[in-house]
Length: 151
Image (cartoon, rainbow, N blue to C red; front, side, top):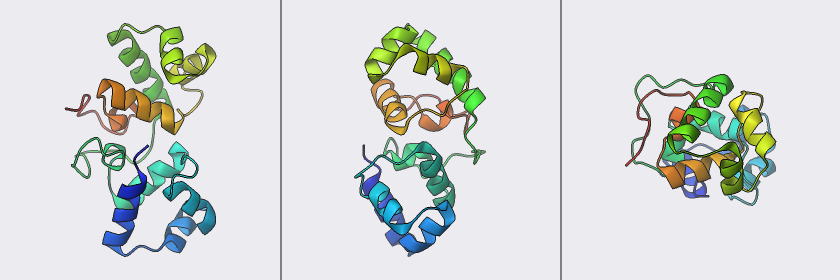
């Protein structure tokens, strides 16, 4: 994944200390360091909170575009909206739940639970879908209605 450099850049540009970020996320500074240095993949919940802190989009953090944020962007991830949108995306791309699960190297029930809005998608799964199909992470997460697809 490629969020480490962007997060480091945002911290440096804004003069934000890791201690401050960790306090805002409710995690330890060492845990934050593990996430920022990509020693472990940051859970989407925390990635979204970092995006909100810096007022940037998930697409920007993932380096899918150079636009820091979108007009009328929402702060919260909407699991129900995500479920609707991931199912819509899957059908538009003629993917079965089994095929999407195979692409993500996960199980069919995981995809079913995402589509039902039961669970928040894993960060690497979101990144893989968005990168492969050029779809906006912010759109899928229900944070914005536009853009849907990225160039």
